[in-house]
Amino acid sequence: MEERKNNNIPRTLAGITVMVLGVLPFVSLLLWTVISRWSLSDPFPRSFTLSGWRYIVRSGDIPALFRVTGYAIAVALVSCALSLVSARTLAESRSRIAPFFEALFFFPALVPVLCMTLAVHQWAVWYVPSLMRLPMFSLYLFFSFPYAFRVIYSAYRGGIQASRETAAVLGANSWQTLFRVELPLIAPHVTIAFAFAFAVAYGQYIIEAFFLTGKHTVFSIRMAAFLESSNRTTAAVYTVFYIALGVCVVLLPAAAKRITADRGGLS
Image (cartoon, rainbow, N blue to C red; front, top):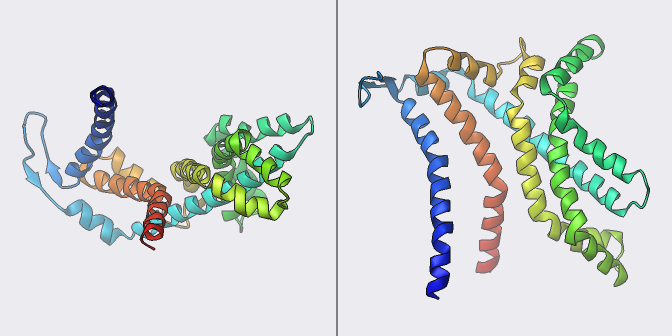
């Protein structure tokens, strides 16, 4: 027992170190949201203010942040759905061209975002100027899909494929195998795939900046303007909102799973 405790000490220290390194930058960012002046020669800030918080509330930029978050959530859900279908199809396929499609699905992760955005934007302006949201959504999907597919396809290449074959041997049809075997087993992987796909889509602010400029308020452009200025207080407030909302969405599936598990235990 004593030996097991000693073996857990390095893990505990590593966990604490990672947590501290992850939390400290965010704590520093939070401090800057209320600091109006802090010279390098001063050990402590000279004055505090809530001007940054008042500005973002009055600016009307928060709805723009929720809009881009909604786009990222929708893209992540579609990415997971397409990845599930694609991974299932490739796992069942005995064709020789299956490896070609596997490599093709990973290809978007290698394409520079700016180059692809410029190309699609030019094409959209010429051919679908009244439907700019459609090519914008397609671009988000193009870059987020490989990450969701990677996670889900790896699951199908692992133990899930064996479970599917066992269910088929026991007489389960395709739909029974999907809902009673595959989905329960794939659920943790889908959660991870959603987090990756959302993070990629949420971070591709260049796409929104190209396709919505002049029509809507683009939160990332507003945030970048303050980051380039000397107004650190307001820049910190915008950054906190951007990070906090993204983290909340990423943690939402895990929180929902925990709540469901707790309710199941109570019942």
